[in-house]
Length: 345
Image 1 (spheres, helix red, strand yellow):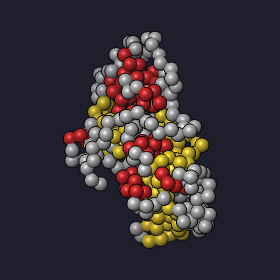
Image 2 (cartoon, helix red, strand yellow):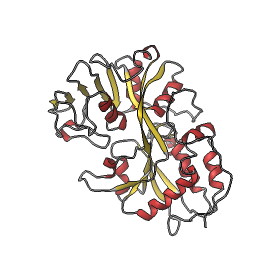
Image 3 (tube, rainbow, N blue to C red):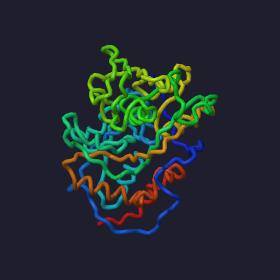
Image 4 (tube, one colour):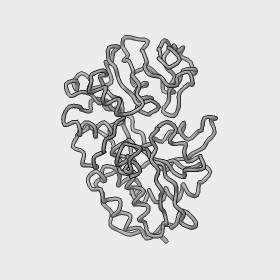
């Protein structure tokens, strides 16, 4: 991936009918009295953030060798900053960018990280480590995601829904994401548990394998069967299902869409709509999933008091989800304004 300076966040101008974004037009002005510090001595919390998900969480510069790579921007960055501004909370975050998406949610179970974010959907499967043990816990959701298709503008009518995607259609996905897992379900290539349909062929670095319809061939947003590691292409068992092409980065997907080597990108509507806006009409968001998922921060499951304290601060900042992503897009100062009303003891 080449170096690219990420533009500052701007107001979305892409209309997506029916999209669910946490928040309303409500603006609160009254002070309230809640609990105070989350750590006994106000020690900084080590926060890992995903570096490549504008406008939710991203680095000021995509190049890991650049100083700007360590500057955290986006909605979740402003949530952390607002928590730091809450009087008496004594919260501060030492932020570390993470370039690799898979298992980012498990980082708080390691000795080096206390909290992780980056547009992480809250899933039970993401609370468990590779041994199946509960390792992390999530805060309550502060943002909602719906999956969508990003297509070239001329194909908007052709791909206005998930219906009718046939074998001649190539859909790009970001491996080990909710975009991949949910699209496989919507396309009929996997059931609700992520079990791939019998007869599905999957290209991997070790060769092509064929799913038999059992749990030996599973793809979820948290992990996939070991035999499917590094998967690059999924070939459907039916002409009435699309092909799926995998990428290791969103930028790779967008370049493939631009070069017409794929027909659509299956991804969250927030990220896709941001890309559509920046494309100046080249790309549009077409199909929109009816299912909404919530995103939150992950913390060590063995720190319930810290989790509860941070969740309390987040609930205050969002006024139990009445203030959220939509309001922040309208006015990026809304979270800091809310933080100044905190009168914690």
